[in-house]
Image (cartoon, rainbow, N blue to C red):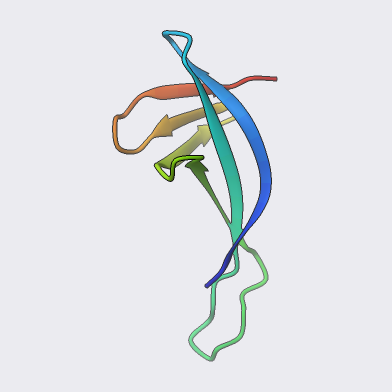
Length: 72
């Protein structure tokens, strides 16, 4: 399963810190070896920390639990 970088953006936490976020799409393989039709989208900070998408422009850093908001 290979991840392909499809986007980058910045997000800000409540204290004003800015985080560079990378958006990846991963093709998942079915048990028969074929790829599924819908790729999975994942998010990571530029330093590699995982990020969970909460909806709309809201995200949460998995390791620290800090909530960040995408900067338009």
